[in-house]
Image 1 (cartoon, rainbow over the protein chains, first blue to last red):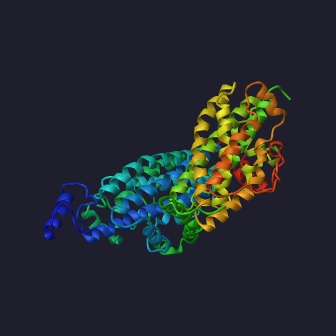
Image 2 (cartoon, each protein chain N blue to C red):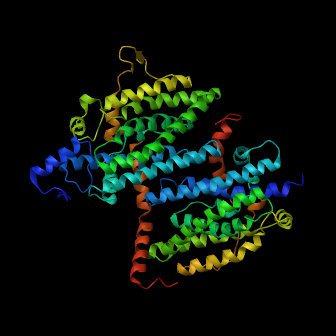
Image 3 (cartoon, rainbow over the protein chains, first blue to last red):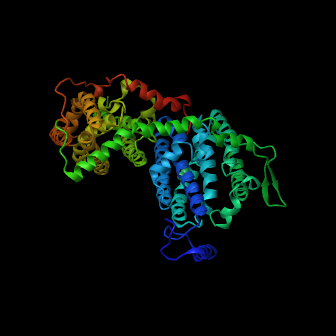
Length: 322
Length: 252
Ligand SMILES: [Fe+2]
Ligand SMILES: [Fe+2]
């Protein structure tokens, strides 16, 4: 995978890689790339793919209890989109020379991560609204910039994904709007969901710039185009007015409009709590991974049967006798 | 009882079939053997849910009592549900899910093809689209029955067990009473008995391909069309209806 079809060797390849980046052109699978670039790209795309797949679970938790048939249909379609995003992203990752089975195994062994946000439980229907509004909302803020990331297959996957994510964000906001304008109990449900999802949604955009180990190199390689703190500020700026529109209280007493900066100031994120979740000690880490591993193990006989059947078809081997 | 009652009941029967199946398929999303199958099961779920909504909304309209699709789905108790008992059988393992789907598809393909020329245009319009969906589902479910039946020793054992477990609930698909006979005479409904040859031929051909056999035990459980269900429905409905029932008269 290390040799290039377009550039012969040594420092010439490195300067070609650097030239592509500085020209704002995409790195494609056949291009030479530094080992560390490949490793970083695999880690980031895999983590993103795993997040989409694990992300089916918290919202999937409400499919059977959705409060109307229309909401049930929208929710099934949304969760299905997330599985589809997982597929595109695994394909993008495979162009870097790693297989989906290997990626799956790394997830199951806990050697690759998924977004910390999916380690929180969905305790009411309003959580489905809050996830669409805040979690998909935060994800889009990040992913819109990733449509211009330097690795071509990842950037193109992001273009497709972003189109669907904006539908996800809208349906979430619409659920929140309905609840916020609904009965006393519905408004309480919406506020409770905002209280629980607000801080994790800010934290999911990643550690602050001064703690982020990969930021400088990733910016230099054009993998990241904005820092975590820049993306987080943009998310806060667009979301706070939406919360006010809903008549809901953002659970941050330090939140204040800063006329001088032209941005919302907000309080300190509890990064210790965030790192606890990343380390595996969030409320649902064990359940989420266990559910994923269980489904994979339960399905082993099905995948084996598919392979065995295909092999029989290919070789005209004798069939089972009835 | 008004003259509209047979159509209302018929629409409930077909609508509940799809609603109860969609409810079960929705629970499978994120639990399937492969990511592609998570996507596929969501697709099939959405097709059945769409059919259910159309049929129940139409039923509510025919009834003219101010109910809507959600009232019908969420506020009826198990004795008022009119689905055939096959649809409420549990997901089980992947073989059971596929056997249930295969029997459903082999029934719904000729049903919807027949209804596509119904004298009731609302029903005909819906059935034309649903027939396409069902043909697609049948291609997929029969493919899995064959692959699992003729796959490994384990998959064959599981697939045969699933066929044996679900076969006793298939006769209920073809149960009929005066509701159907009135509507068949008006060119609105399809006579369930007329669906049997397609169903039997399809099952025979696919099981032969899958190296599987039908159970010889002739026992069949019926009664769903009169609201006499297996005990399973009484667990499925409360889960589906819990949130709607906890907050009456609100919008979602
Ligand atoms: Fe997504
Ligand atoms: Fe999404």
